[in-house]
Image (tube, rainbow, N blue to C red; front, top):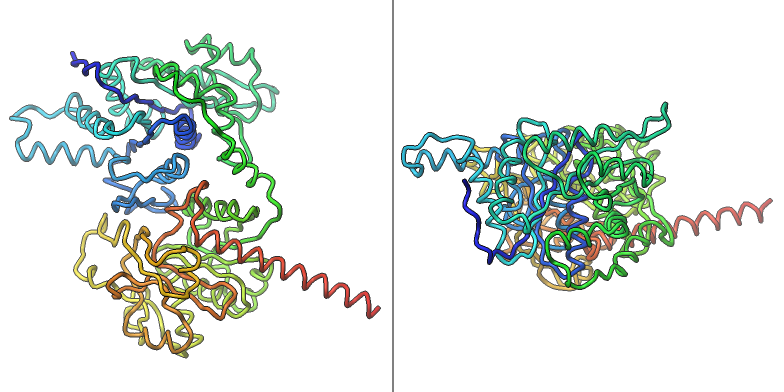
Length: 559
């Protein structure tokens, strides 16, 4: 029988599970609850248990897993950690994302060292104890730890995590932990009604594992009547007020408001014995949401990338563009365009002429790179605001070398190792790396900004720290040529050895960065580069409207 933790334990835990189907939005729900508790003065952190056997998602396909979110300490993590950071406005670490692969690796490493003293290593207690240890590590300096269990109830991969959190709640005391279960209440059009059976089955399966949910969050397309909520409460053994409706909303940032209106945060505080804390002041958050839903004007941004068929591959880019809109009270309409679209200059002009800005994000591999070159060339020559991130900056360097410097055989050594002018080359620190996972230049590194540059003006400081995920860099052998032809190297590593930001000061707004600024953007604190990019796109849109009006007036006068 597990020993109960001392009553002095102050950290509370919220366990978030999901049922019926995947992709219901457990991460957003966990983040929204976290936001509400932050607004109540709680110090909150959020962690995710991912049930796959990969040690981390670093080597997984973007088409299958979505983006890899990188933390300050260089961890490659699930994209949900991006949601957590954006909602609770706090930087997380490697400890906040734990996979089955990492759990088993730790256990096997301990077994090889003889730490189990000859015991037979088993799922219970050794795997579950390792999972519980991961949760305990986050307790110091936090009032509340929110734990999201990846996958759905019934998945065999998730069972060790569910058993571990069941045990853990018993050990910390039932008053110090609650279970929130996210489930689906589908609307059947043929019947003209919502169906509660999937939720009932999901909860029943959870209860068979020894877990009784305290709060149900019901994803639904249609509003749930009080009768439906009472039915769910009755058959799922929860209170009527513990059934929380989660309908589709225009923006994910509205979800905390939806939960608050139904008293979800009040119920969480009550169940955890935290009442008496301050009520949340959501005034600023409401204004933020209103800026997204009803902006004063709109801009059209083309995101030209390699993985545009699966937008989650660029989740942080998508959110950072929205944040840039918040900073300018501008709505951002994003078109996700495959770089393979741009097969010629004519086709490129035809597609991109309707947009107010071009963003080329990160990626790996040669596919689609030549299309990116064409898109960037158009933006540079047409004066369209351009923002290149990681691979986007590297391709911008290739385009500049070919079409401005006249180095026709320029390329990245990643794509063309034998090219005559490798303007992008493998970093020295990566020359002898053989393992794929966790070996890139990862995490937060400082960058020194040049005096009088656009980058320095936007940041408002001379040195910044940004998150990286790459192996290739601008080749220093070509620096002088870039500068001679008008490219400003506006951001360098503190020792001057690495180019981090480039810009064209003769262009309305043209900037590339080797790091990933989208990873540090928050709705409450939009990243300066995204705010600047959207501001420039809005100016471009205004100029286009003015030119259009003048043209129409000219035609009317001549007629």
